[in-house]
Length: 186
Image 1 (cartoon, rainbow, N blue to C red):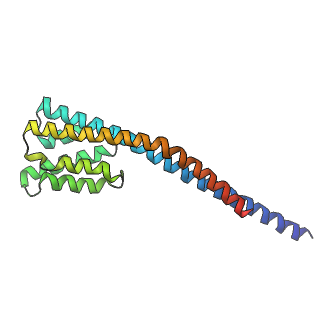
Image 2 (image 1 turned 60 degrees about the vertical axis):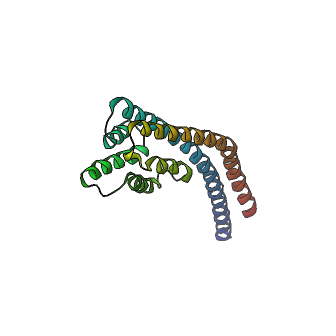
Image 3 (image 1 turned 45 degrees about the horizontal axis):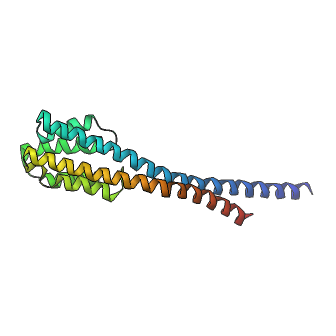
């Protein structure tokens, strides 16, 4: 009799534990989705700041492009500091060896950073920025950086709207799916 009650209680405990795990799992997934939207906004703001530093470096310091990218990396947050640092080093190495175009360097570095920032539209801005970037004069480089900054500004406002709409939806949907899974199991 005692063993049967013990097994029955143990089965209920496992069922309750399973329900709690499913509830927290779905809730976590909803919160994680909303947090990804917030992270994108932070990263876009950081990229916007990086482009401002880059523009200032080109305009006032008149640094070569490799040095400009390295200086930008020092003032930029993760993941963009990785991008600008690696691109700057590639530009400096390329200056001596001359085997890659600026477009190829930017394209390669964008591919490297996709694991940290996976939004294609945002990364396309950097690819467009890299098109013939090193071959342009100072005035054209400034125009190109300004255009990229404007595109980032537009993407930032889109991301903020998306966060307002989808952020609450993801959280609510996660909790609702958690509750539904508990109901289905019980």
